[in-house]
Length: 140
Length: 75
Image 1 (cartoon, rainbow over the protein chains, first blue to last red):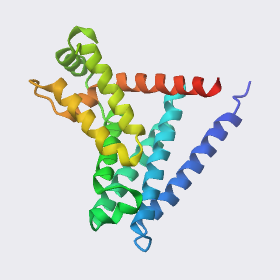
Image 2: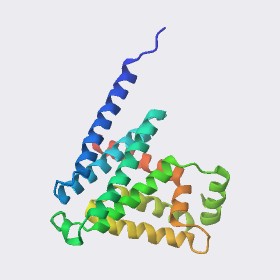
Image 3: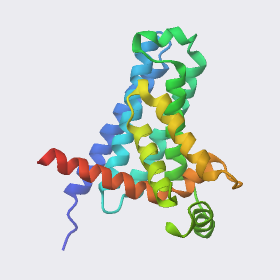
């Protein structure tokens, strides 16, 4: 009996598309010839793409290793390009047309860093349980 | 606030930060930081360390929110 390959191929093709789209967005974020507001919008779209991949992983029965790798890569890229944007943001007024400030980018960056920690760093299960017990007592 | 309510509030605040409109993200981060600071007061932990140990709880919480949202949309 052969293993059905179509669904797996379909998933791989989907991730390839996501990867290509992420490359396009990352290129736009880094394009210094573009207005900073356009680059910031592209960056928030890149962040949304990371979130979409994560949602698919959470809803899947068991996310594949490739999915995890794609998620880690997208998050790293979004964090690095967001940090770059902040360095290039001339002043708080530059983002006024978007009704944003650089602090909004900082806040989103912090959210991405938390997500990266939670998904892609190792943790000692015993230490994790000890900390949860210390902070929240026996209720968790 | 009971500890279980405190935990639930932290998970909700992280979720709200993640899904906040960009213009609301600063306020959402401040709220999350405030709740985490309350929880770790007196413990030798950083904010990031506490959120890191909450990884499994947060994934369960987020998955439940996504499923509930999908159910609401299908009604």
